[in-house]
Length: 329
Image 1 (cartoon, helix red, strand yellow):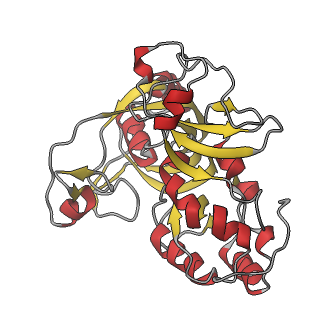
Image 2 (cartoon, rainbow, N blue to C red):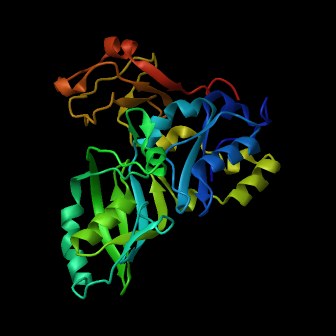
């Protein structure tokens, strides 16, 4: 699966290249546990090395949950910026406070006869492209420094501002008398349970999410994910390279800047770089394709100027991660 060599363990029992440069493990999350409990479980399996997530899944959800180790934890926000793919099921005629079937029931209604496959499919274009979505109260978003879900558990509901998200693709994959299923390719920060509830409301009904599978997070898919028991077996046997990925694959979505043998940047035009509201990051690669480092640019690309070799700008940039695997193993 991966081409890193089996190396003897260091302080944490992990290969030296993981401790120096970090790594990623792709968990096939089961329904039930929280994402944070899985982070803690993996941390213990790997000798206590610093471990973090790249975007949580609700306890109800299953599927691709990428976790990062060591120096790669500095790139958590970068990994979170990648697109996601989900498959979600919704129970029609049911409304809950959490927008899923694990919440308290607010209302139950008969599903109108007008809610047909054709009706739902006709509404999909309204929820495709760049749209605004209101964060649900049961979410990790912060208002005035407080997590929304903590306020919701206290019975409070506060005003929230809609957030812009992008639904690249939205498909209705199944529709029965009291349930429907959608497939979604979306930008990070999208609440799938809210998307399904809003779709049902537009069709004249209500819905609560009954199942959610994350099929992909960035470059990683379910084919790359391993169940926790399998990861535990590999860790116990010291077979680290069979479940820990180097970070190169996880940053393939970032703009690339090639550097020459002397470490100087080759010409590039960054005026076309998408501006997302966050300070942009790029990956520096050597002429042979080896990933050199991940940097956060220190200038504003929104000015749409054409930069051509940027040694000055790059010296001012923040280095988030540097590849140390080329120097020692």
